[in-house]
Amino acid sequence: MPTSKFSPDTLKSQILPEGGFATNERYQVIFTGLPSGIDPDSKTNIRLQFLCDSVAIPTKSIAAVDKFIYGVSYQVPYRQTFAEVSMNFLVTDKMKEKVFFDNWQKKIVNETTGDLKFYNNYTCDIIIKRFSKSASDFIDPMYEIKIDRAWPSIVSEVQLNHAGGGEPIRLPVTFQYKKWRHVGGATTPQVTAD
Image: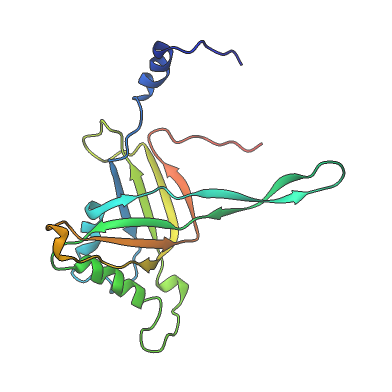
C-alpha cells in the first residue's frame, strides 16, 4: 500500500470529504419493548430520549485463549464478550425518572420475598443513535446500535446537597444485556462471508 507524505493539507484532504471529525453531542437513546407498568405517567420513556445526559457506545471484545501445538504459543478467539453500559439521566422535579427505574428494578426482584422474576418479563432493547454534527432533523443517524435484552443492574445514588447551587440532579444507571450490534446508519458497511 503506498504511503503519502504527511502534511496538514494531506490530513484535510482525508478528513474533510468525510465531514470532518465526529463530535459527541448529537445522539438519542430509545428504550423499546419495556416491561409493562414501570412508566409512572406513560410519558417518562419519551422524556428519557431527551434527558439522557451521557451514554457510551459500549465495549465489545473478543476473548482469547492460548493455543500451543509446537514452538511459540499464540492467542485464538473463542467468544465475544460485552461490557456493561452506563448512562446518566437528568431528573425532572417530580422525580418520575427515578420512579421509572425503581419500578423497573421491582420487575426484576420482588422487594418483599427477594424472588427473581422471569428474564423475558424485565428486559428490553435499547437503541443508541449518533447523528451527524450537521444534522438538523435527527432522523437519519450516521451510526446506530441495538442493545439486546437490557436491564438496569445498578440504579446509582442520587446526590443531594445544600451547596449544589441548584444544579440539575443526575441519575446514573448501569445496564447489563445479552449483546449489542451495529444495525444501521448512513454508511452501514456490507460484510460478506469468506
